[in-house]
Length: 229
Image 1 (tube, rainbow, N blue to C red):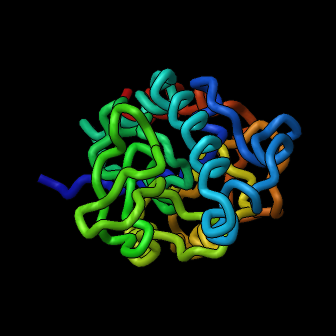
Image 2: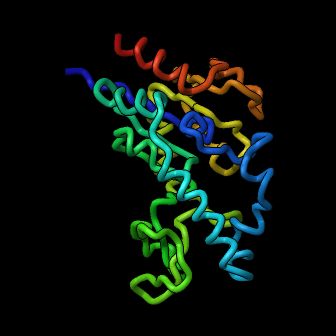
């Protein structure tokens, strides 16, 4: 039996937008409504924790109410035919809820909390969300397991290894403006079938990628069917 081809799907906020979750940098994105330095930075956390937790509680509520869309499900279904790794900039759990088994969250997961003094102390977010006074096992305040501005991105080495080994590399729903995560796209081998799926503006001209100017919810089911049909 021949070894299954390896697909890496590098996903951004445009994938979850199909589930009703706001992107961050579009004209109506979250960072047009909130000052990210005031709610998503270590400086803000040390200055005043209440507005930080209030913001992420709103995001958490939206994530919990959202459902996986056709793009999430198409990637999960491809696991029956390909060796699929999802490398995502998204902090929601919609890939997992759709059934994806191997998901690397570069920017953290809102469904988890970590100790404020030790980011390695990670557990599930309580049903009540993020609350002042909730402590980790080592006694420090719990905070969202989110990579805030100025903090190191997670799983970079594992993501780089997966992309380097990929036979198919799909970049989906991201404008490629957030670094260092966006720099991962340069690690795909030249001979790999590379596709960029985004209906709107993409920050860089990528002549090595085939551009599919469609929403992920439209493009991915069709592309998955073409691979498996």
